[in-house]
Length: 177
Image (tube, rainbow, N blue to C red; front, top):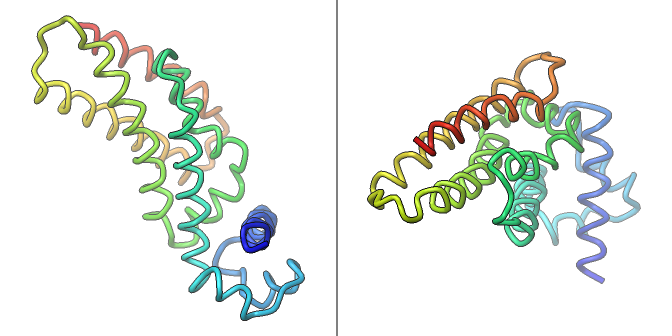
């Protein structure tokens, strides 16, 4: 029952984030819409920001479990950013409400896992050192995380998948070199 309630709180929170900025969402509004009492909310979360951490953290865990290591860098990054694409308005509202660090940490963790895996796979049999592999993966992570961060902060209408596609092709070619 506790898992069901926690999921209902998170789902209701996402609905509210699709309607308004994070700074305008209150615990009172959330519990009213969710149909729970204040104690139930605080049993699961210490505050709204802990709810943001749960939302983003649980998505990272889900993504990590289903990461298909046979995909290309582009396919893997699009899969990693599927949550952002699906809940773009909610994520932009979190990002633009002074909680950019939470979103950036989420993006960085998802992208880092993908770039680490891909760089290791590409480096097999090349004689690349562990230090080189880590450096290339880290560089690639920062490039992609920065791209996504800039996209979230802008009013850019360009598709995130299209941008990832363009940059990943350049990155794949560079990693192969």
